[in-house]
Structure formats: structure tokens, C-alpha cells
Length: 363
Image 1 (cartoon, rainbow, N blue to C red):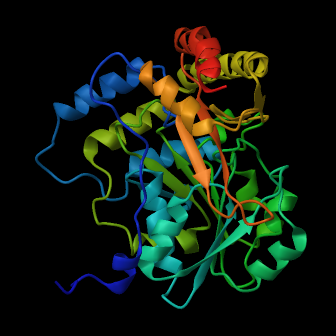
Image 2: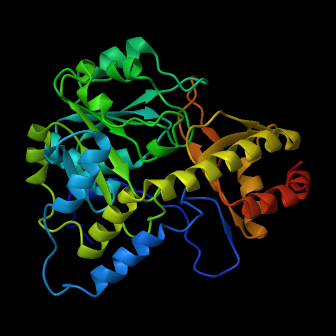
């Protein structure tokens, strides 16, 4: 049967989210969710919203949320664009700035959803390959910035957990386009920024920063995020978003979460302490662990049997993320490894309990 889809849709494979098992008993360390519950103030805000005016449309601009976020990041509310998860912001950006004959670029390996968004739009995709230290070649970066419309950069990067400085990021600002700093894990950085990058002259007013509530605020099930940028950019992107893209309950939850910074910071501190403990323990089992400023670790094993290690852990109802990136190495070969989300201390203890048996089973 002849396809009636656009050719771009027929050609693409589509993005594959991490596994979400529906039965109980799993140690789930594969999708970088926060292992701790959201603030009780968030739960109360959700209850009040559910008892309120759900029969009418939500505020299309999430005005109350924008005011709270603007204060936290030291910008005016006009610099904030709420979204149905950070991924919607990335979709809106791609639709706002890219035509079918344009190109997007991103460091590789990182978040491959950028490729799916470009493919949907019919754009071409260029990867800026990272070396073994997760840095890019400056000459390659300079060449790309002259030709692409949007440069997506996750910082901290996933799956590697590294960050780049403002000076390094400015090397990727397109000559006639937008630099997008995807800060899904920004609150876990050693020094989280609070809007100062948006005012940095290095970016010429053409920087968009995206944030999510799925990680540091324990609200992956709510689907809420936001973008920050100069009001001229926000105004244009607002034309592209869905009219009522954020629902009443999500707006209430996100606003309450931002207002309870103490709760988020307490959970952040626990996650970072557990991350450091896991990073110190894994080398004894033959793992190489990269330094991380996120709520996960990227690790490789001396045996190279990463898929087998993942499968052995899965048999024990421990779910981590096996990741493979084709053509990521200088010789054109594939890079693979394991990304482990930081769970509770009890969950990490379970991982370490079985690790000797798991490693022996693949050696």
C-alpha cells in the first residue's frame, strides 16, 4: 500500500523513550527521574486545582507561574515561555526557526530527540562529534556555526554528565540562528546558573535556555517545563505553541514546586551524595566512571559487555539504560555504555549487592 505520510515521516525511526515497567518490584534507574516525592506543597496545590475550575480553560500564558520563575531567574516574566514538558519547548523552537532546507546541529553523543524533531520538520542534521574528554574540535564548531539555524546543546550533557563553560558554548552560536541550552539537569550542576547566561554579551541575545520539572522537582508525571529567552524570541515562539499548552493542574504544581526551593535543594543534596558514593564504589567492579554534574553516571566496563551487564541487571529487576551511539568514535565506530540514574540509597545498595554476581556472569 502506498504511504500517505509525508516522506520525512516515512524515513524516520522516531524517538524511543526509556522503558516504563508497569508492574511492581523494580529498581528503576533508567530515565533520570527523581527518586524522591515532590514537595507536600505541590500535592496540596494539585488538590486545590483539582477542586477548582477544571471546567474552564487554563491561563494560556501561565501568568502566575511566569512571575515566580522570573523572580527566581532574575528576568522579567516576558522572558518565560511555559510548556507541556521541556520537550515541547524543543519542538516549538524547531518549528519556529527551521524550514525544510535548514540544518540543526548538536554535540554527539547526547540527546538524540533533537534528530527526531529535525526529521519531523524535514531539516537536515549535523552532529558535532565529541572526543574522549567530551569536548569538541574548535575548527569543526566554527564550520558548523556558519551554516546551521539552531544549535542544541544539553548542559549537563546526557549521557555523559559533563558541562561546558559560557566561553565554550559561545563557540556554537550560529551566525544567523539560535543557540539552545537544554538544561534539563541544570539544578544538579555544581554551580547552577540563575539567568546570568541570558544577559551575557557572548550570546548576542540569541540564547534560549530550557528547563524541566521532570528531574530536580520530582514531577516527571506532570509534564511541565519552560524556556527562557529575550522577549522578542519568546513572542515569536508563542505564536507556534498550542493555545492552551499547559493544563491547570500542571501550572499549579509547577508554581508550587518553584516556590518551595528548600524541598528541591534537600533532595538535590541527597542525590548528589548518593551519586558520589556510587561513583566511588563502581571502579571496584571494573567500571570506569566519568565525572558527572547531573543525577546520573555514565560508565563503561573493562569487559566491554555493556548490553550483557544491562540484561543481567534487568533479570534481577534492576533497570538501567544501555545506550549505543553509532559513528561516535573517530574511526567511525560505535560508542556504547551504561547510564545509571541516581536512586535512593536503598536502591543503590541493591545495585551494589548484586554487582559482583552480575560482573562474574559476563566475564
